[in-house]
Image 1 (tube, helix red, strand yellow):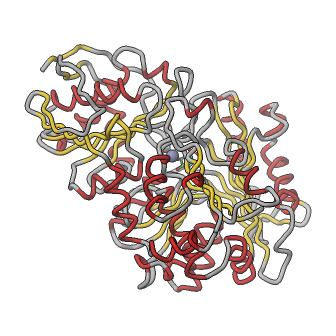
Image 2 (spheres, protein in one colour):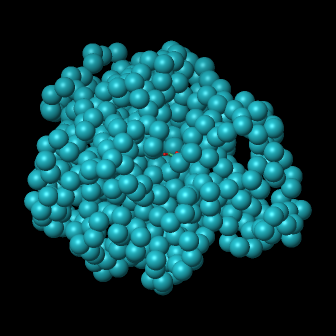
Amino acid sequence: MTKTPTSSFDGQKPGTSGLRKTVKTFMQPHYLENFVQAIFDSVPTLRGGLLIVGGDGRYYNRTAIQIILRMAAANGAARVMVGQNGILSTPAVSAIIRKYDAQGGIILSASHNPGGPDGDFGIKFNGANGGPAPESVTDAIYARTQIIDHYFTELTDDVDLSILQKTKMGGMHIEVIDSVSDYTEMMESLFDFEAISDLFTNGMSFCFDGMHAVTGPYAKAVFKKLGAPDDSVINAVPLADFGGGHPDPNPVYAKELFSKMFAEDGPDFGAASDGDGDRNIVLGRKLYVSPSDSLAILTANAHLVPAYKDGIKGVARSMPTSGAADLVAHKLDVPVFETPTGWKFFGNLLDDGRITLCGEESAGASSDHIREKDGLWAVLMWLNIVAARGQSVTEIVHNHWRTYGRNYYSRHDFEAVENDKANAVMQNVLDQLDTLPGQTFGVETVAKADSFTYHDPVDKSVSKNQGLRVIFESGSRFVFRLSGTGTVGATLRLYLEKYEPANGDLDKDLQEMLSGITKIADEISDIKNITGHNEPSTIS
Ligand code: G1P
Ligand code: ZN
């Protein structure tokens, strides 16, 4: 074991989902090592324990994994299970931590951010429950990075990760694992594979876009088992630069899938996942299912799926996610929780048995089977529901709106905004929160305006400053939030929502329906003037 002197770096504070920086930042000498040592220093159970390590296969993944293995050995981990070629999807890491009672896992991913030498990299610690470390732990890790002056490593050769094998580094046992089989087995235990298979036998056309990212091999294995035609999984080989694209399943970056689904003779069912396999989108022919609606529809139909046939305990959504799931929860008479953005806030609710399902507007959904969002799980939920109801995705969505009404919902992202300008927009809205209630803008009157604070009902922790929301008497609302995952400048997110009852206009153009509150959000925030960005860079 070698003790290497080092000094602290600024800005190693984990954001919404771990520490994300450019590859170049991570490649600085000692940068990754400092953060990894801070994890070992902050989570003492890793000494003598089992650690799971894997990443989404992006550029620098392989080098980073070897660094982590050497440091795990030097820091006294008893065992490490690592994905073959260093690759594990985020949901697979969560499942493996839980299956093998590990003390935690390290996931190397920058999710949907671009990869390659000029792209992004990330590292995240998940605890023994399989979920992202809560704020108390990420705060402790950050505090360590601020005072660190040495780290421990082994001076030893790389481990061959290309073959499934058991080996040793110093006193530490290493097992190179194929996680695809464990994951497929878990999916089989949750869903009615026979009913889903019948969809394919009966000719349902289907397309899953792996986006050249980590989900490809998992999707290939699962859909092969289900008898889907071989060519229905596209872009299935994980590439270090994701084929030059952003592995972000939205209309901009999943263009190939969207073009197929909106073509005259397009498939009946379309889906995609992101860089590390935790996000999902689902499309019907000529219809993109908004992730907020998706969570509501999965909640309303969960009882049709074997794993949830006895009903669900409750549901949780992040605050900016639309209230569509709340309407279903009220009807089912189960509790609904509103958490800050980021999966880590669902962990306590799941562990405490208060919820079965949870999701975010950012294409994330999952259940209590693991403690991460799970892209393929969501797709299989949908397929199982399509099979059980004997209806297409499009029919299911329209039926849902006709029952519960429609929460028209969109997110406008202003990316690469200068930090001080983004802060000025937030400050401008913040300064008006006290005086907005009662004011009228066009047809809307403000009922409530606040900065969202979350009181965790389980561990009683309090998380402040989780987004600025302006809620109108009509129930419409908008929310401003600063992204915690970007690496260049700031990203301002504007979330817009307008509810239309079941007997109202359910098939209108989305942006047109939201144009009234979009205009009010612009007027109150002065976002265009302050930032100089006249249009959002991405609309989803
Ligand atoms: C974004 C999403 C958030 C998600 C996170 C990690 O975070 O908005 O819902 O949990 O990525 O996938 P943000 O950039 O908004 O902080
Ligand atoms: Zn992701």
